[in-house]
Image (cartoon, rainbow, N blue to C red):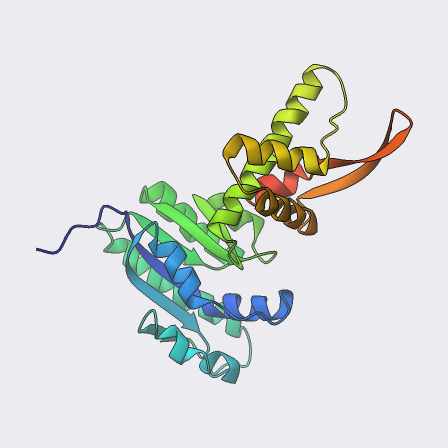
Length: 253
């Protein structure tokens, strides 16, 4: 007897034009990592169907079809003979498929939509409010509508961050928040420095010191944490500060 999966059952709809073109333009010609995305989503969900939508008359998109077929055979061609509104036409076809699946999706717990386009916020609201479903969004980093972000149950941005790295990032941000909150209660400025933070997080959570230091450096490189200079006891020291808006937006706190 085949074992029954205990994961929530999900179906995924991928706006491939958003994924491919946004990565290419905004992330130094990065290409989609289909297997990494599939591994990420299937680690949490029992994926029954994955649909890819795009105008594959674009040679660059068409060349990706063999790689897409490594994870699904549901590839929907959205080519429009009209010279106008080609991207909107892909959205229209994709929306139609999502609504149709919703009408027969009593067995589906979660709908996963890969797009950053605000056009999908209405269907997300419909699924969440009218159908009482969870809706997760995957979108290219820095290319996601705020209305779509706010409508969804959860959002993950690509390129994907390694889960272990994300765990370390959250522990570091959590440590900095605890220190900042404690300093506010004492009406003093937070003076978190690089190596004391590395030592505290590594010791408290049993992490490798160098890996923790690398994670903190990455947080600084990505703009989640920044350093300012302050005078203390006649010396100038570098103090860590957190960009809380950015950290909250990307799920680090």
